[in-house]
View 1 (tube, rainbow, N blue to C red):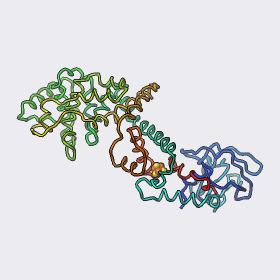
View 2: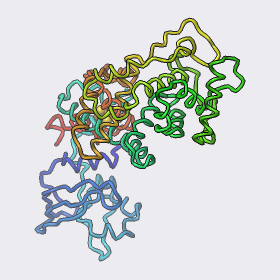
View 3: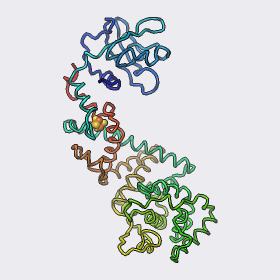
View 4: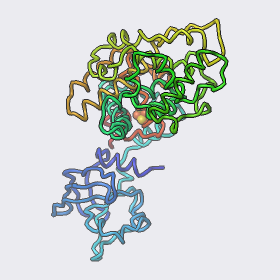
Length: 434
Ligand code: SF4
């Protein structure tokens, strides 16, 4: 069953036999330019140039599987379609007329597209494999694969830009505060990203920086505001934090936005990733590197980031606890591990540099973002394993980020006709065009 987007693809790339091309009314057609695919309302292709009979036309082209869809879609009541110069169809089952009763020239393609192209297309869109084109990937040149990966990587960074720019606007265009909130969200990793972000949004960085010399006060503010401090704890450490938080919360009018303990997730998380441990690490980051949020702009190598973040070490209480009140002898809390640091580069530092560079039109930061990603290992997850099994080379995070985006935004939606790899599979052999 042919779908309209396949017909768009065939028309756009002119993958059909053009010998003795003529309208269903018998007039000769010559195509100079098929037009530009229009993703908004109105006819499917604009700015096309064709010669029909002896007359050259420039204008819009509408594409349908059956010409009768013209009426089904109510185009006869829409003035935007009255100046369509050519109706491209799979089958002309109902000739269409303009308001002045003139016939719209119609081209039928069903006998002009090769069976092998249709079969190849069906084999991809009907494939049950998680990566539908995996059977063809090996034959595709690395140029097409790299080019598509680069395209989707930029799309991924752009889609993340919206989130970062939204933070930037909400912080009254403050890059430092934006970086702080973004990084806080990252410290929550997958399951606690949202409460961690809200925690940072409720405690402006400038309040924390006032207390950076005193890590206990930083812990009091963040654990208290996170709603994790028990008022009736028997431990002196917790009692002290609670007292300190009560005083500071009043001083900075914090308590009205306090989170509740139930907003934090502890289940199905390794203890080293508990939000209590991540908050303790975040405290250490602020007290050790108060200018970290501005130094992000200066990072030019992965080594620099790792040297900076590997200094993070939790306070003595958290070397013996994963949660408040539960002492454990098995703890190996040394701070952020290699994987966590790379995760922060991938999800916070590189996207931040990319957005900062784009927004300020300073490409140096964009290149730095790419350079950082290029120099760390690819993520290890199900999507990357699928690509590797399909024979795709993924050697660094630049490629793995592209591979994740390609899978989520194209492969899962079977968006193969908009994918350069898909176009290359269908274009591969000249005999696809009969
Ligand atoms: S979207 Fe592209 S990479 Fe994904 S399955 Fe289709 S052709 Fe392959």
